[in-house]
Length: 626
Image (cartoon, rainbow, N blue to C red; front, side, top):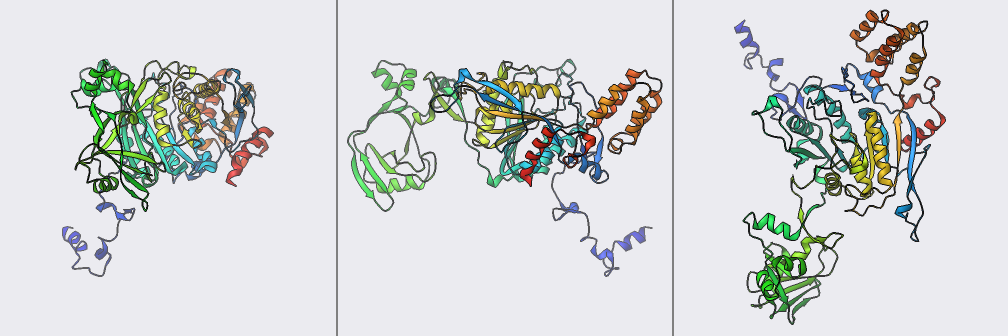
C-alpha cells in the first residue's frame, strides 16, 4: 500500500500521466489555486443558501428555511423575482405660498392621496421583506444609489430589542450576506455602504464585507460613543461596560469615491480649553495681526497671473498681549477678532516654494501672493495669501477660517471628523421624529454626518432596515432623495408617521441646525402578499370546508416547497383533534410563514385579484427598466 502511494505520487516514474500535472490541476478562485492562496476566507454553514427572514411582527420567532443556491435555484428565482406593489399612497406638503413660490411653514399640511403612478423623483417607503424588496428595486435602481446606511439586527440574544434578531451565528451571517450581495448591486460606482453594529458580530461581518465588496474597498471603521451600557449579572467581572458601537464603511469602488469633509462644532473657547489647555497641549493660534502697513510690489508675473507683495512694516503681537492692552480676557479676544488671530505653518507646496524664491529680498514683516488657486476650497477665486519673510517663509492661517457661527452668532470651532465620534448625544432621542422607538433609534446628527460626507443633494440614500425612519427623515431635511424598506408592521407605521411629521416641519433632531421649515413628499407602498386571499378563505371557513382548504395548501406548488416535512406532519397529526378556531390558526400560521408575494409577471392573473390602481402603480415603477 505504501509503495503504491509512493509510486502514484512520483513525478519520475509517471512523467506522461495525470500525476505529472498534480501541481497544475486543482480548485481555484479568482485565478489562484486555493492551496496556494493566503486570503482570509469566512466559511460557515448555509453560506451558499438564501434566507428569506420574513417576519413582520416583533414577537414572531420563525424557524427559518434555508434555500441552497444551486439545489433550490427555482425557489430562489421565484422568491427574488420583481413583485407587485399594493396600497400605494402619496404624502405631499400643501399650503399657502410666498412671493417666491415657497410654502409658508405655518400653513403646511400633509395631503394623503391614492398613488397610481410612481414618478422619477419620488421618495419611497416600502413595507415588506427587505431581501425581496431589494431584488425588486434592482429593476429600477441598479447602480443608482449613492449611499446605503443600515442598522441591522445585532444578533445579541437580547429579547428586549424590537427586531427579531435571534438568528444564530451562521444563520445571521447568511441573512446579512444575501442582503449585502444585492446592496452592492444597487450602489453607484462611487457609492458607499455604512453598516452599524456592536462588537458581537463586528469581526465576522468585516470579513464578510471583505468578501462581498473586496478588501481593497474597505474605507474605515468609525467608533461611535453611545450611552454607557450595563453589564449583566452573569457577565459581571468577565467583560467591560459597553460604551461604543461601530460603523464599517466600504466603497463599491474605492478609486471612484469622494468623502466630503464634515466637522464637529464646538464653541471656540470651550474647544481651546478642553482640547488644549486642560490636556496640556500647545495651542497654535496665539498671534494677532495688528496692522499690515503699506505694501510694496515685488513682482507681477502676468504669464502665471501671480503678483507678489511685501509688507515691511506689518505689526503682530500675542493674544495675551492684545488682551492685556485692550483690557479684555483671552476668551473675549478669540470671540471678537478671529479674523486677525493666526498661526504659521510650513505646509509644503509649489506655491510656497515660488513665494520663497520670488520674495527672497524681504527680511522683515510679511510677504504675500495674489493668485487664483486651481483646487481646494478657494478654487477659481482671487485670493491673497500671507507668509512670514526672511528665509522660513511660513504661511499664515487665520482662526476665522476654522470657525462658523450658529443662529445666535456664537463662534464655533470646526474640527474635521476622524474615526472617533464621541460628541453625538445618544440620550433624549425620544423627541426625535415624535415617534416612540426607545431601543434602536439612531441620532439624527449621526446620520447627518454620514449623509453629508457621502452624498450630495438630490442623490439617493437607501436604508433597508428603516426602523423608525431616522435615515429617511434626515435625508429629506438635507435635500437628498430616499428609499426606506421596513418589514415589521409596527415600524413601517412609524416610518410613515415620522415622515409625515417631518413634512409638517417638526423641529426636533437636526431641524434647527439646517433651518428645516417643512415640505417635501414621499410615496408609501407594500409588496402585495400572495397568501392574503387564502388567509381570508381560512378565516371564512367552517367545519365543512376547512379540510378542503388544508388539502389545497398541501397541493399548492407555490407553498409546499417552502414548508418542511415536519411542519406538514405536525399539522396532520394534530389537525383533526383541534376545534375550528385552532384549525384556522394552524393553517394561517403555515400560510403566513411563507410570506409569499405576487410576482410582477403574474400581475394579470385573475387568481391574485390585482386592482387596477395597483396595476397602474406597479407598471409605472417597472417601466423605466423597459
